[in-house]
Amino acid sequence: MFTEEMLTEILESASNALTPVFELLDWGEDEISKAIGRHPHAADTLYHSFTLIRPTSDRMHTEFVYRGHSRELLDRVARGEDTRPGTAAEVVIAMCEVALATPITQSASGLVFRMWADAFPDQPRIGLNNEHREALHGSTIDDHEEFTRAKLAVPDRVLGPIECSGRHHGERVDCAYAPQTVPFDLVEPEFVLS
Image 1 (cartoon, helix red, strand yellow):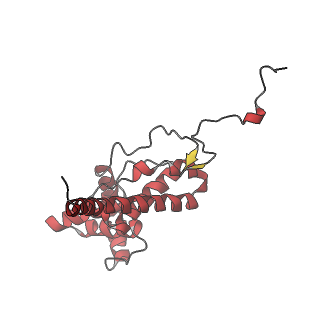
Image 2 (cartoon, one colour):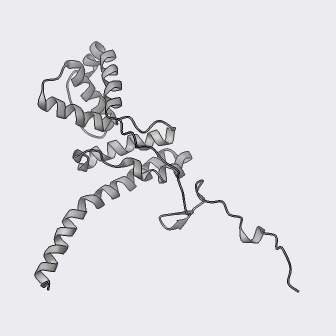
Image 3 (cartoon, rainbow, N blue to C red):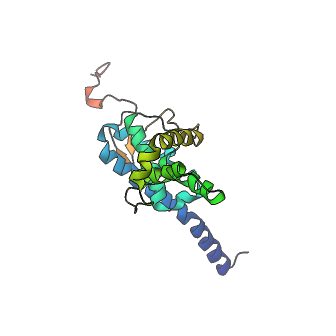
């Protein structure tokens, strides 16, 4: 039999374990809302894109990192671009892990600085002389970016078939993915009772 103390401990443990999950859900929903504001033409597709913005690293439990990752993926969805290649946030995470293991070149550090600026425009800039580094190593940084995004690709990060019940957050909506129904008052009766 459970004591009140044991139940309290279990509930506190479960709450502590679920708090980060709920934070990610809130951040993801907020980023989808912001993306819909930026791209109203793609609102229905963006609404159904939550599965694309799964974190791919424990480092994405940091709010600005997850938001940068999600923002890029949602903008790709709105523009009809491939969502599989690595995001700028994923590149920063990977390059920082490499830099912890071994020294990196000027062009590799230039990639980190470029991707940081792309993924986290609301964060303080890192690195000095980025313009100088870009001028000297820009084409090599471009090559590194293409290679790294391809290496970090998530093959199943694609939107599958979308099915919609015609409700978003419990509200009835006119979603492009909902089955189209004819309003009842426009249906011709097949017979008339007398």
